[in-house]
Length: 233
Image 1 (cartoon, rainbow, N blue to C red):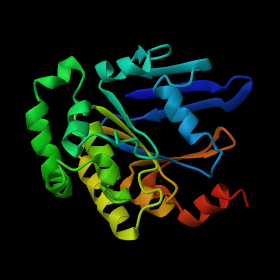
Image 2 (image 1 turned 60 degrees about the vertical axis):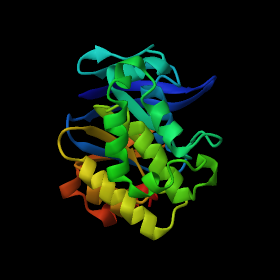
Image 3 (image 1 turned 45 degrees about the vertical axis):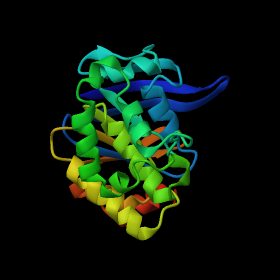
């Protein structure tokens, strides 16, 4: 579904990604792990058009995405749930969710998807009139995920969902990711909790210093070996 080939990208004169290639299969959950500074978030931003590619290609179902503006990615059924939640703090929970279905093509199904979001995240229903800025970190992450799902994306990109959250909330979020990995939706997950990420994934990529250091089926991953590569031992 998603093909990244020999991708180079960075910020101004600073290149971060060096000939990165990876394949994300349709209906599967692919996790990308690696230490801070490995280039994981830069890769996601390049896919979303937030960072321009200086070389290589990004394609979705055979269509090249290079140069596609970020605001048009929803037309390609691609949504990213960014690191740090980034909710609209002065808007209510329900208003945030409605913003997730803002593109005209998705408005007709807004009410139906609101109910689906509330069914998946019952706490959001309880807090639907509450300002997003008053939510706990875990609730804000649930809101960010639910908002991302409001456009019914076929490719869902999730960046560091467990960052800074309590273990119980992390458990709940990974249970939801496991449910979303039902073969109907393609998911790319960037996550530093390697054990949890590998457990929920179908395929694993490890990045080091802007390059892919490992590509392996999740069922074949040896965590001890993975951690040795992760910490460059």
